[in-house]
Amino acid sequence: MAQSTRLKHKPVRMCAVCREHADKRALIRIVRTEHGVVVDPSGKLNGRGAYLCEQELCWERAVTTDVLGRALRTTLNAEDRLRLTQAKPQS
Image (tube, rainbow, N blue to C red; front, top):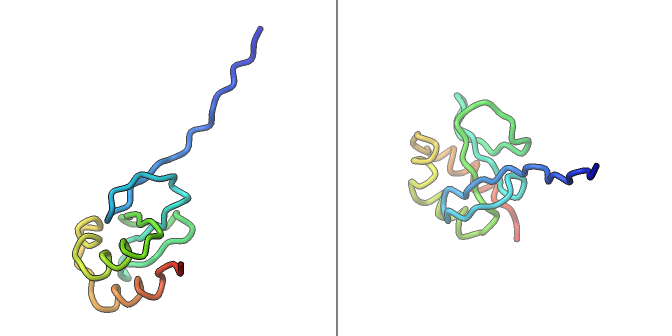
């Protein structure tokens, strides 16, 4: 009897800014918590989440426009925007 080789499922997520689909581990999760909007390196924090790719343009648009706020269903304050600017991946 032949053994079937089944591929393991890899979760796919979409960048909230550029709308590109990528492997979940390739994107950075941003979470709305009761303490504000934070970067979630583990990908397991409780709260409403959105994903950003590592493109510098996506991070700039996420901080300067309301795209990320709409995805998280919240309003980003100055502290949230500063936190996101500091967490931006270096290219």
